[in-house]
Amino acid sequence: MILYNVTVNIEKEVEQDWVLWMKNIHIPDVLATGMFSENRFYKILHDSEDGSVNYSVQYFSDSMEKVMEYQKKFSQKLQEDVKSKFQDKFVVFRTLLETVD
Image (cartoon, rainbow, N blue to C red; front, side):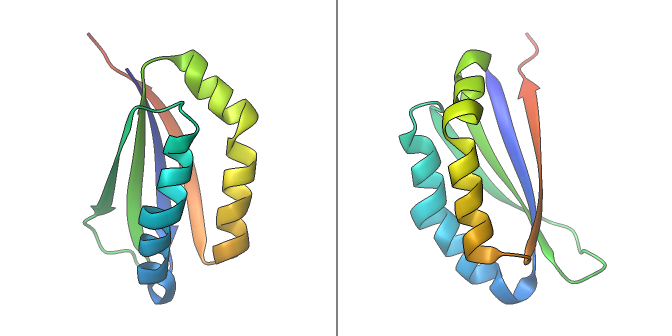
């Protein structure tokens, strides 16, 4: 199992709009690519010094090939959608993890 983890630091003033947009638009769009079988959406429970809020959006795939296909065919447009909607109100970093048997 491959986990594509997206950690987002979002400014407090747009947090609720961002959460609703993620749940109703972005996450369904990512899952609609067919590259991921499920997802999880977590709020990270710690205080940021600047007052922003952090979230982890996790997408699960059964193969690295599907993750690579997602990155090649779909990720640029979906990332541009987020930038267009929330501009400079967030910082993001992405991590790929693999299940250890």
